[in-house]
Structure formats: structure tokens, C-alpha cells
Length: 80
Image 1 (cartoon, rainbow, N blue to C red):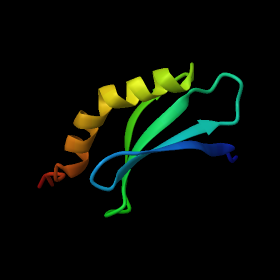
Image 2 (cartoon, rainbow, N blue to C red):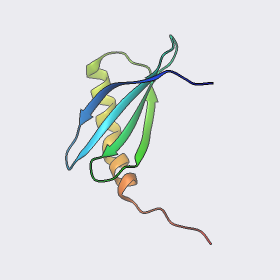
Image 3 (cartoon, rainbow, N blue to C red):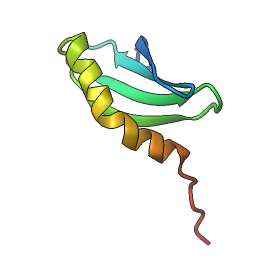
Image 4 (cartoon, rainbow, N blue to C red):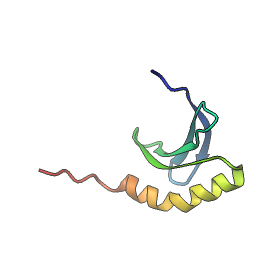
């Protein structure tokens, strides 16, 4: 079974980072926020939230961006 998920917005950030905002095609679905980089193909899930308006969305992104960039750049430690 496939979900109909759409990319609904993209916000540019500094140093080649950007945030992709996706939303499932559903009346009750919130939006998912993903940190991406032009330098690497991986994505980092930031948070989910219902959409209220663009100003609120930008404020939420700014609240999460620094910690998300830190996590994105932090190497994953392998356990033996």
C-alpha cells in the first residue's frame, strides 16, 4: 500500500542546507520537516507539526535548525 506524500515546501538555509517539507495527502496529516544538504544525499528527520501558517512554520524551523545541523554533521558511532 502506497501513501501519497507530496513535497509542499523547501526552505533554503546557510552553508548548502535546506529543509524539505512533506505532507501526506490526508485531512488529518501534519507536515514532516527534513534537513537536507547539497553536499550529501542523506536526509535527517527534524520534526512533525500540523500546518498553521507560513510564519509559524518558519518559526518552528528556526527553533530546530541548529540542533538538527549539529546532528546531521555528527558522525554516527558504530558499536561492536
